[in-house]
Image 1 (tube, rainbow, N blue to C red):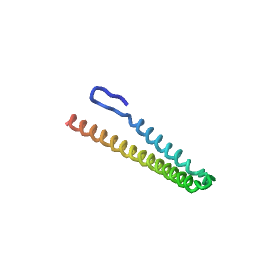
Image 2 (cartoon, one colour):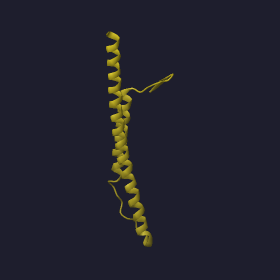
Image 3 (spheres, rainbow, N blue to C red):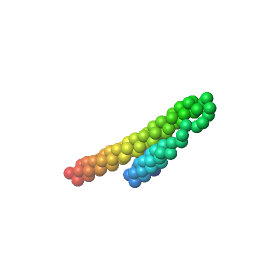
Image 4 (cartoon, rainbow, N blue to C red):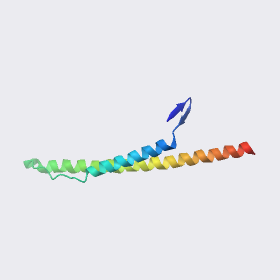
Length: 98
């Protein structure tokens, strides 16, 4: 990414990299829910400990879903950015050559 005066440019490859990193993080976080530990033995607090564990697992799953959704949004925005740039370039060339 570069900032030249008032113009901000982001190379298309950088956006693809960010999308990939978000999806990789999604997979990594999602894999954390694969090894769910048993409810800890905590005497009369076992139920509460199990509820906390369930809440943490649900939150982890929500983080994974969110990371994947953000990755998808970055990909869609990158596609729109590229298409907009290409359309603008084509229009400028069309106006320049007529």
